[in-house]
Image 1 (cartoon, rainbow, N blue to C red):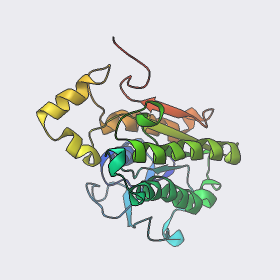
Image 2 (cartoon, one colour):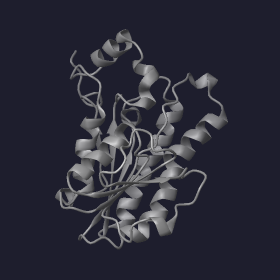
Image 3 (cartoon, rainbow, N blue to C red):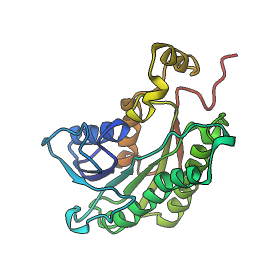
Image 4 (tube, helix red, strand yellow):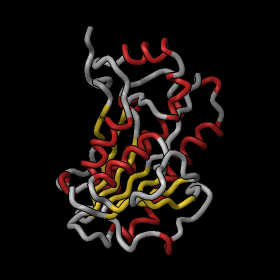
Length: 237
């Protein structure tokens, strides 16, 4: 990928952090927007803007004057039986996964239109549970299903200048998934559920994310790409 300017919203831990670090290693100028700096290292060409995008407006004056790529990484893992879910649970998942992405995209759209490259790129995140029905995922999968719809709609509306794609991972070893991988037994069981016999790492997701954000993927838009150890498409028995 060529050097460029990138904004990673939610890039202080997990997948977002891995994306920010990999973009920087490839020579990109990376701005990370998140509530706290978290695990994001000081210096090294990584700029941090402390902000809660769900409650605060993006500070236009603090953003670059153009962007080649924007990634929205915040998410939720709200896994509970349907009978226990309240309206507030669905609304909270929708606010975090969909409305947060909408706010971020709307704030960055003029900057993406001012990209130095032929096309700019927006990257969103779904989950394998949208395509593959999974118990206890009603709220999370509903919200992420809306993200997939947003991806395809914006890909049509913003073409040809801006590409929009989405990655749908399976369980990945991030702080958000900590309680699902909190013991050796849970980690072993999670690995066994995947055809490739392991759960994901942030690096697995970041590799594809950087490809989709860069100019090597400039004929790809409107896609929901599964990085899930085969969970969505492979059965071993």
